[in-house]
Amino acid sequence: MTGWLAVVGLGPGDPALITPEVTATLAEATDLVGYGPYVARVPDRPGLCRHVSENREELARARFAFELAAGGRRVVVVSSGDPGVFAMAAAIFEALEHGPDSWRALDIRVLPGITAMLAAAARVGAPLGSDFCAINLSDNLKPWALIERRLSLAVAADFAIALYNPRSLARPEGFARALELLRHACERERVVIFARAVTTPEEAITVTTVADARPEMADMRTIVLVGSSRTRLVPRAGGAPPVVYTPRSTP
Ligand code: SAH
Image (cartoon, rainbow, N blue to C red):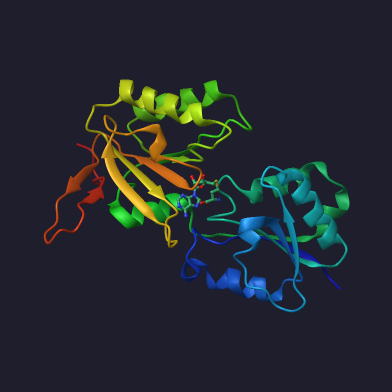
């Protein structure tokens, strides 16, 4: 039996946002590997083995997936959103680069998904409608000083900015410092969007400003979108929330 390895994105939460390509690949898998809550999003069926691990064990999980595939299993490694955005795809290739040569002959595929920043942006309008960037605020894998430097340079370049992993119980102070930096670098009215658990039943979206943004508005299920200096609100009729968008052009 020929094994293979697919690293797939399950999208932001709503099953309707899983691509048909990912659904078809899941239907052929013998083994599912990933962080518990993501593995739990795939419906059970006979013949599917589930291998659940802790969130921080990415490299060990990647090596384990390679061992299964090398042994002839059809392995799907699941990520939320897109597997290439602060998720398992890079961990898989790190394991490949440093692993046994035999792994390099395997059939390895990365199947994209809808990443959180795009799902969140779509909910409010088009805040990422011009140039933008994404920053992971977790300092598990890089120094905090580098995060602050990238954030200040992104503001200086007038990007709209998506902030992934803004705040966890283990690192509550980082996001407060990031907001402090934004308060110094941006005008008070700069648009800030807190989008929590987008496309799930717990979805909550708050559109506010840099002046009114508070650290407690974010948790690990929140993505924070910071507008560029051009990002604006368009009021709507009939009690509908305003649309947030960034114009395509800069004069
Ligand atoms: N690979 C994922 C990101 C993993 S990092 C993706 O492409 O979306 C985990 C972070 O993603 C969370 O801390 C949060 O900032 C963001 N995130 C993931 N799913 C989300 C959702 N449904 N709503 C809001 N933010 C989400």
